[in-house]
Image (cartoon, rainbow, N blue to C red; front, side):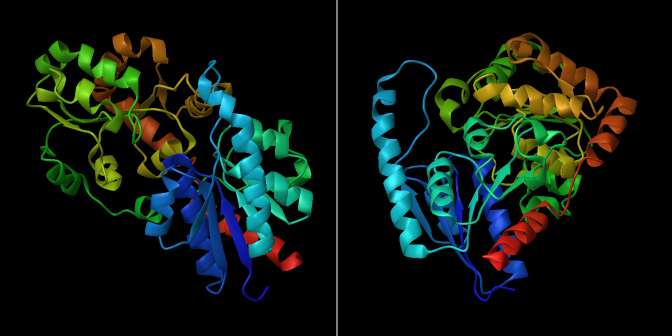
Length: 369
């Protein structure tokens, strides 16, 4: 084993990139406690706060995504890209890593691009069933590609692919939380049906609109309880709406105990980002996916369909969420056989040692280096 390997982990922008990256770092330290790990993220993004809280140092690059709509912010993109490439060069020169890992997100592309050009061993992690544009551009340059879905040979050279699954936070993967604990925590009755509705930490407009538009139906279904995370972006718009004030609805801007929320839920309505899906594998709960249409290459729809085709979830299109999401969730709540089948099927998709598998590949590259 390479004495004290030096490893850079780059990426972030959303919890969907940050939490798996931290899980990989934790798994590396578990396997080799003397490893030195540096994170590289995007200045102003949530990784600059979350990573130090997890106990790792982080440096920031001045970079952001390129917006598909015509916007003034795109005029800064070439300047930011140049700045981030130069910043990546300086970080690599100073830290001299044995391996550079990219987990997706704004900072991942520039750092891996420079690392590949300079001959540092590189590994990327692709979370989705349809590879993002940055990872597709890097596909032939990196040494290894750790993926979560079968059939990724259409994006990466077959000899570089390692099927690992997506890392999930240990607190969720190893959770022993009970339905009763979860219900108590959120002020709900464990003896009555519970629907958990969320759209990620920032929220999802169509999911929130579905909740707001169905106040009369949810009031009528008084036996059904709901925990609704509308997201910090939508607090003003939905936090005081009629649905949020119903006695059978607990509305929150943010939920910090996802383990308890998953544990108590009978049915879940959510987006289909890679991290959410991976967490649901371990939660083993019946889910209705409403894929976000505002993502590159419509990858959330492709992620969702990989699970739906395995008979492990239902799907409602984003544009149909307002009319269908709540009625279909109530239908599923009342179908015990279908709930049981979905739960059994989604649990089969879990890969419990994803972070450890990725850590092993990272340390193998460090050893060769």
